[in-house]
Amino acid sequence: MANNTYCKRVENETILRGFSKSGEVALCCKSQNPFPIGTDFSEIQKVKTALNNGEKHSHCSFCWRQEAAGIMSWRQIGNQMTIDAKNVELYLDNTCDHACVYCSPKYSSMWAQEIKQNPEVTPYVNEENYDRKKEHYNHVPKILGYIEELGKVAKDSAPLYINILGGEPLLTSAVKKDVIGDIIQAFYKHASADEHLGLCIVTNGNTPDHIIDKTIDLLRKKSKKYKNLHLAVNISAESLGSNAEFVRYGLNWNQFKKNLIKWLSLECCTVGFSMAVNMITWKTTPDFLRWAFLHAEEYKQRININFNTVMFPHHLSIKMLPQDQFYIFDEILNVLEENKDLIINQKLYNRLLLQVEQAKDSFGKLSNDEKFKKTAIGYFYYIKHHRHQDIADINPDLLMYLNNRKK
Image (cartoon, rainbow, N blue to C red; front, side):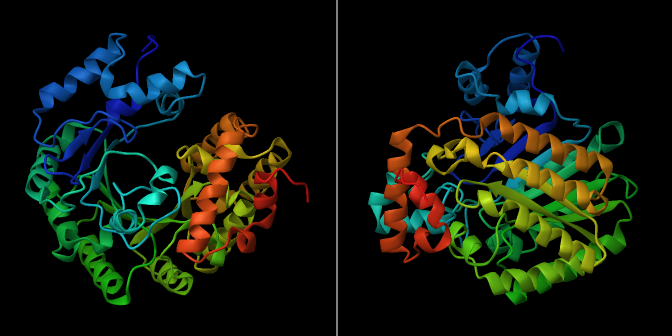
């Protein structure tokens, strides 16, 4: 497609969120103008038609703003990638036991509760619309109906991958009621048992023992029933120990390590890490990657890694960092080259390298912005006094940099 509005992501993605009374359907995770979850799909098709015809549809306003500012947009990044499957992202609700520093109340019930108790933190948090009156709605029947429709056309369509996210999906009431099994059943209700279905659970790795054990038992049973059911778990992580506990507030690092071993030991499931690379953890990124590969090697697994970077809020992104830390990219690429045989396949390895290269495009772009430096300092002050975690203990060099002091 030759026009300058075409989006490969919109052609292949659907986002379903159960965060509000009406729910949300989006054709990209960045869309700021989603449809209600019951919207007729002929209306949604109009977005694709508009983009294919060179029109800047309002559904995609996030990318138009990025491109107008001279920043490589999510659309442009996606157009550089090989996307040869249909992807559905399911956000059942915002139940979560974390309040990650870069997250928001839309995706975390723990964040919603903290803002109610400490409204002064609001200026530091991602500003996204969310339902303040009620956090949980039952959109599962509509979601299952949509997946049934995908099962009907599975034979004539690209392979389907369903990603279950949150919040923390393994803590949602729907998962506790076996919605994972219901999703698999909904697809195969009309699809042949020979059709391919990929199912990925994106988890924060903090799951209590009884829940993770029940989930693993379910996945084992389903993998035996459907020979072309590919199961995966992507664990959200980008740093280690106390650093991880600072960024992913609510995390118990010991529980995380124990759960990781359970996932790596599950023979019917591939394991990956979904990183959210940010200003706080930047210097430790190579160490985290080495640690991940060491575990893969120990448990004789090949893994997947998504090198996602925090874009918002600005004051926590790698856009804030000074150019003298750009060398970390070289170290990251060296680690990846040394361990490329531990990535699941060449396609995923190539995508990972592309993600790292794309991160370079924004690195340091806001390093001279004093307003965002002050915002970061204010946020760390809040964290110290309300969460009792001190950035000076985690990353003293970063604090010195933000205060315009040299080491």
